[in-house]
Image (cartoon, one colour):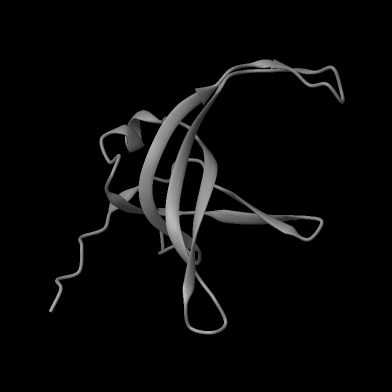
Length: 104
């Protein structure tokens, strides 16, 4: 597969399983879902940055558990919900450890 167009890069902060349940809106039942939380730097127009915590569904949270506290890069897809942008990890995508840059 070619390199993905969009990736997220951030520090793995947490993994967890969101319990299954029933949707209050539709009444449909849904299964438990593995989740991962990444903390990254979001660039600002003035050249600065702010920290952003993003929670993503993942096929297998165990892929991220060994990287808690480390920086990873993962392919993502995006979708719009009103004025907000949501992210998802495509099926089969795997995280890659990012080596820290040497400080001068």
